[in-house]
Length: 227
Image 1 (tube, helix red, strand yellow):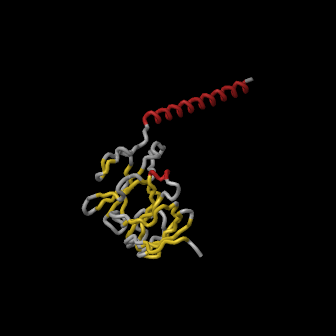
Image 2 (cartoon, one colour):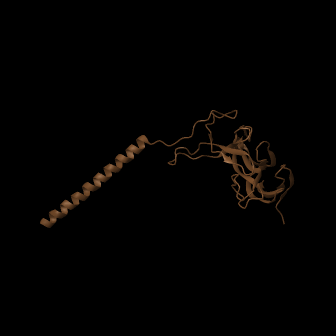
Image 3 (cartoon, helix red, strand yellow):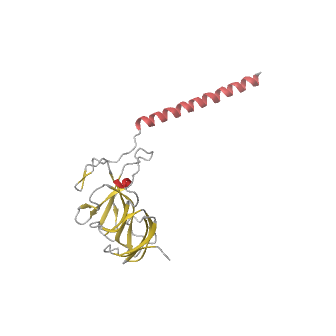
């Protein structure tokens, strides 16, 4: 009988401990939910002459462009705010360039009515890692010579096929040259040297390759992949 009551008291003690731990966890969770708020980026109204208030866009951190006195920052959609990490950016809509020497800024695109589906900086000498080059040098004395971008307009859903286009810009983002319109997907690219970039893409269901001059955007050839 004594042993029976000993086990009863031990079981009661364990139940009380579990109850205390459960109540403590509930209190901590409640306080965290009450006082913790995810960090949100500041709301932008006017940046470098562009009114951004209507679209509720976020300007990301400035990054250096290799071999230049320029910085760039992506203007992004706030599509993923509210995550436990404080919110992450959505798709880029534009790029803002800042000149360290003149302290002036300018936009790459004339408006923010498109999504930048992909982009990469072309380098001299060419980068070993092609996709998602963010503009920083990977090797010593590497210089950015152009930016290859894949764009899609907001009204692309009304287009039957080929709603994207491929463009190229100098590293300062002052001008844009069109490489191919009505494209469907970017398959990648290869940069043989400073004066040439081979871009593989899909248009009208056909895989194609174009050869362009990164410095001028001049397309030397554009043909379907064949034997």
